[in-house]
Amino acid sequence: MTTLTTDTTQDTKPAKTSRDVRISPDGKWRSFPKVPNLLQYVNTGIYFGRVKIEGKIFRESLETNVFTTAKLLLGDYIKKKQKLAARPIAGTFAEARANYEKDLESDHTLKDTSKLYRRNCIKALLRSWPELDALAPSKITETGCRAWAGKFAADYDENFFNNTLGTLRNILERAGIGRDENPARKVKRLGVKQKELKLPEPKQFEALLETIATAGARQSRHCADFVRFLAYSGCRLSEARSVRWSSINFERAEIRIETAKRAKTSSASNLRYVPIIPPMLELLKRLKKANPADDSTVCGVGECEKSLTRACKVLGIHRITHHDLRHLFATRCIESGVDIQTVSRWLGHSDGGALAMKTYGHLRREHSAAMAQRVTFGK
Image 1 (cartoon, rainbow, N blue to C red):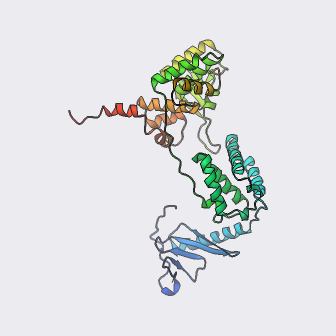
Image 2: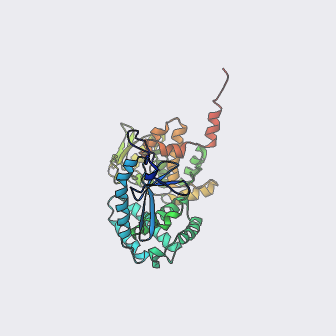
């Protein structure tokens, strides 16, 4: 609930005489005969709107403890509820879903990847609840939503579960079901646990590169160089694919990156600049000799997932992905003494380092143990 600030210049008490206020039998609520549809929760002083529409009672916080403000907000609250109640309910969930998908496709603020993700949520929802499309939205119950959630949560991770649940909620609201009556909103989201990073140690990483480069495939050495580029730059996969030699500034020792993960509604720049660290400089000089054209891409391949998986299996180490190489870059930078806020900018985060602190605040045990040896209490 929104934090409230009390305005001491206004009357936060409901009334001065007992004739103006009524107390509920349980002592929790105040009502006001002169102001119908207005309630006050005794314990917190927060005012609520309460209205009955077509036999259903709606009660919602007005998010204020000021009586005069609550009276002003009450009218808008009642109009909003009446408008929602008048909204037509879709005949079937399939009809509501089709309307939601039309809205999704026409939303100019969403990227194509975001739209694709939502469509995948819908596909997973229908696979896990085959009868859903034929149901009338008004017949979808809290019990049914909970039964679906129990099965779905067992098959998918927390993030995908939460996003699919959110999609179900949105479709039901698109069908005309009010937020308070939405049965999917009775199902709680799952807590998302921070992923434990299992990254290769320096010697393991060198062995990984050698294993990939000598695998014998036609693109083996290109794959090894692509792994190096990802690990030395912190680029996302799609960002690394688009880096051309015209993006490399050897004089300023930096790489211009077109940030891939940027909301269309954001006013932040879609470009960022990543410094060329020593191992990256060595890699770029070697690659430049083989491919000097400015309009060509720096890396000879655009993915190396299979090579990574095979090399990890051969070496008997934990499997890593393209994105893990981005984590490896950030971890090595922080272990080398670069502050998290700077690393966050290199990664293209726009939250001032909050996500980086959450992700990389606890580095590997080996580094932690090494740092612990520097702590003394004597002279």
